[in-house]
Image 1 (cartoon, one colour):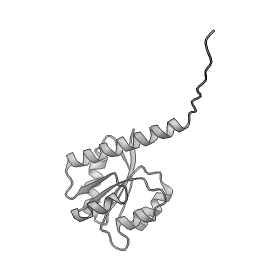
Image 2 (cartoon, one colour; image 1 turned 135 degrees about the vertical axis):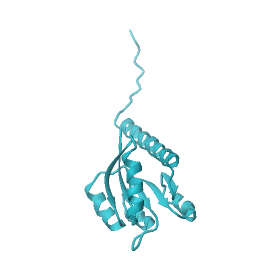
Image 3 (tube, helix red, strand yellow; image 1 turned 45 degrees about the vertical axis):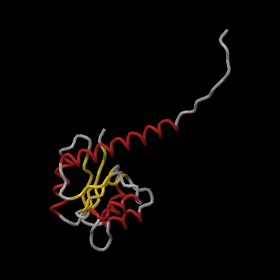
Length: 140
């Protein structure tokens, strides 16, 4: 199982670094990468995405503003160079928060958390498709 993901970051160097981590991870499939929130929002309309790697500080529309504009956002792993945003991230129910520079071990831990959350959500959705009926029938 691979999570379909996008990267949203105004820094081309940071996008390349995250893309390398994504492309080398067995549980991730890169769908697209965007340099700003407007492109990302348009891309989300056309693609089914399970996970967004999202930079917080971007010009015009920042990462938090993008999240607020989405009706039903996928999982999000925030990426930022400033630890000050960690507390605010909890208000947006993000899956995880990565501080730049990103280490491989920390990236792997974030992806593991996202995969577990995805599996849990889909297990619940599967259970909702079934109806259990209890009866007091007795064997003869």
